Length: 268
Image 1 (spheres, one colour):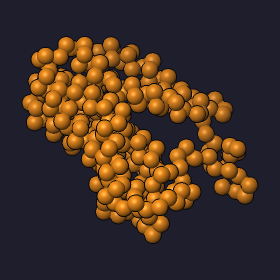
Image 2: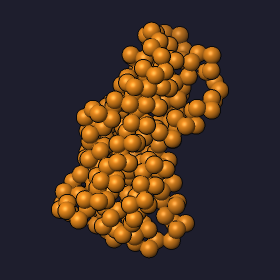
Image 3: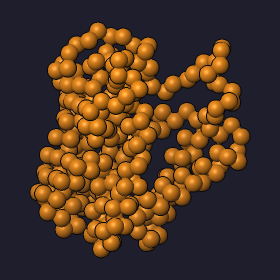
Image 4: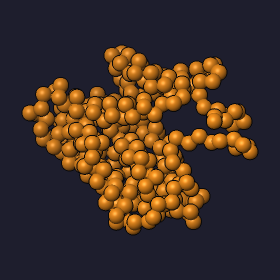
């Protein structure tokens, strides 16, 4: 950034927040309690629906629990079980899940620098590989919300606590949904499954400041149902590829659609 320019950041800068250190255990406990808040309860409801879905598709409860713990991304889990239930080739299912999970990479890249004490800036610590596994939508949002109140030394403990708490709740909910699948009406199971996407969509929409972000959300809302009813299969994957490509092209063709690029004017 040149002299006199202001850099607009969506999330808090660790250098601007210096709360007192509370200790790893206290930070872990604060993060773990996220599972008992409204976002945690929404995630719990969604995984009840996911557990019911896996039962309906013929998966065993241990298989459903395995996907929650080791994939830990509800859209990717849904892509996987639907692909396998549709007799899609295993390699194709793996590629679809991997591409779906790629959306989490920018989240990891965005949050990890905020978790590093000043002496570790610029290098990876072993615990960050564990923390990266826990980075999913709800953990990411709630950790960023908590950053201003956390010292640099406490932030890793908070994210780890939030990840462990939410994953534990979600694993329990997966098993519960699987066992209750025969008693839950199909409509209720589907509604529960969509609780987390609705929560994320509302949060994402509220944070969309640039026209480019709004176009991306709109493209997903329009193309999602189109591909879902097209019969092509892997509708989430096609929605992301086609919608993302269209928005990228629009960003190049329409001036001022997205944030300034390197060398361009900065926002005040």
